[in-house]
Image 1 (cartoon, one colour):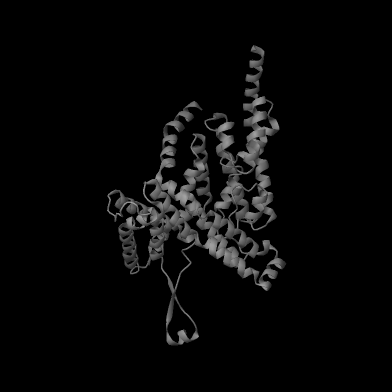
Image 2 (spheres, rainbow, N blue to C red):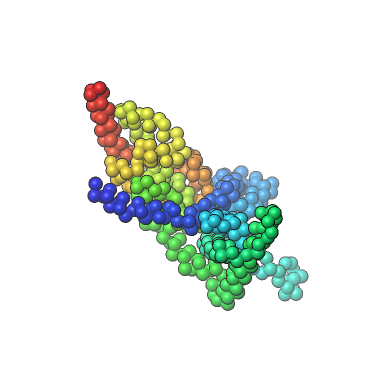
Length: 440
């Protein structure tokens, strides 16, 4: 075990540290997080629009016109995730490069729209007869389908912007000019170069079958990464890596989430579209962001809510009795930092095996039951990651009781799996306490 510890500390900790401090990855993670309030609002609107899977309620919404109102909220919030993300990523990355993040974000937003293909339609019957088409804005890539493009454009824009600013290639205003005005003129030259660059790229790609940056990225990255991220094998690999990073003291969720969240959010959006069209349809994807958050990481990385419940059940030592009461409330809301560093789980060799295996077992069981249609699949509704289990499983699966039952079953299994390990450590702690009392 000591050998395993030394290997993890020697190789994994430096990798985690470098990834955690990587400015680009941090910008992607934080930039996409800008869109999460809209995603949550849109998800709830979609859930309500589909009547919480109650046909009579949905029919009532359709008859009264409320359905279209909720659908509009969904499209105007969930459906513009990529637009918010491209601004957020560019802003955060430019800030990390010590330049004006707001200007970079605005320029990235413009570059994104320029890079996104529109579509043509006939405005009315007269226009159809005359053969006159109207250009319309394409919402296809405004949502999760455009996240890969948002990431690339946001990062490139911020990097080019910072290159110009740091080399002082900008228009300088006299002292005394308000900062907002000064910054807007400073962004003029790099902004013009970036916009012209992406316009030229769009013009060139229009001559190819790919048509745009989005087409290229979906072909090169989107399909392979979605195939991996949407598979059980991919979920297992990411789960193991997340646990290992956490074990060496690095926030595993931040590391793997920065890479996988765009993939899982994209798969979630595909489910959301399918659910919006037909709530009773079989969802195209099982592994999505809600699947990982609600059914794999119950209580946070390592599925530590089961560990806490096991601790509350068997703890006899004063230390673990006290710790159990303190760390149980935040763990119920999937906040497991107190568990990681208070128990601790970090660098605790006695808990390494269950900490890795328990969430993996959760993933295998949940995936298997959902693929066999025994349990409803998450329907693409984003649930706050702090939502307690049972409730979150019910909502994530489109108000299906099977989701709540699965969570309850997985949680009970997690407790059983953690029980012998935490009992053994509690026994050691109790012996230490008793020896200390005897010596005193």
